[in-house]
Length: 446
Ligand code: SAM
Image (cartoon, rainbow, N blue to C red; front, side, top):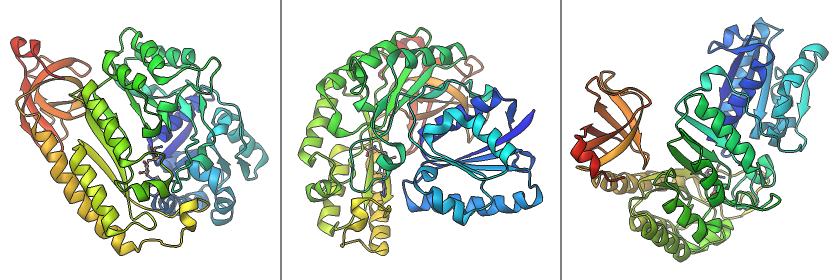
């Protein structure tokens, strides 16, 4: 068999796409290798969301140039968001690259690689194409937890974001195709799926007849053998009472929700074109907590967006404290070519961004630590997914609210089991616990 090496940068959707590519090439007799020096084909799946992600790709392509010099028959491909956005720059700056293709062309990866090998010239394939559900996957993808893309693209046009240009308009997969994929995953041992979309809560609007994420939850919930459903990423703008009710009522949907805020300042939210105010966001949080008090919340924040003052930043700090998130991802604003924010005249200096990033992380550490501390003494459902990283004599798993728990399985528990664990120590980034007695398990809290 020929050998394929995949290098994946960026979000879960890229991880998902890389697996589809590995599956499609497996059908053409390619097997995955971790060793890039042994590969016949190397594909770099790229992210364009921030400049740093792009720099990493060009530096990796520089390394691969040496490999190509030693082995001219090697095919090097660049796929994903950077391929879609910067095809010309890639071809110019990295002539060692033989193939550049965007996500619409993933379904044709086998044919594209063959063409490069046959024709011996650089191929660029970044045209729009109909959305196809690809379920091919490598053998290594049989595991407890899997991603399932339910829709592609985004039409929100946040002024900082490059995604509408890299992933195109919103297109949803039909529910039948998604359910069939989940069934196939469960047959391979999967117990937890994360439904993916750039704006996953806009799911289904474009289908005929239209549907929505709440209805999709109900259908995925019916897949026998599946234990848990997660979904990401949601946009506050599309968060409906119907979806909040479904999060409460559909049993397999976990008590974990990622809702990007981006900024706590109304002025900045407006300049970002987010479509909501801080008061509207807080109303959503209240409705969510009212529906599901055990809900864990996480968010994304951008610091140093053009025009952000210390007063705007203070409002973001205030929101983090007020909402009391369980996890926060903080990003320094990165100027993305072609986006409206890149052209704004009042860009924030790098030092100010770095300073706000550091200060916000301190707040996040304190707030998330307090949230974690609340879990001490509780008995929680844990899906065991491997050995503890710190102590391989112990097991590790995740709660429904997405916390890592390390515990001693006392030889009674195996990977893949769902057990109840009583939390003895709530550390900032993980929990420690002991197997719950049957009495404790009866009164478990999520
Ligand atoms: N579609 C989701 C939304 O906006 O609600 C988020 C998807 S995006 C792939 C993940 C995160 O990257 C965003 O939530 C945002 O915080 C961050 N991000 C996007 N563009 C950025 C930029 N130009 N600079 C810094 N961070 C950025």
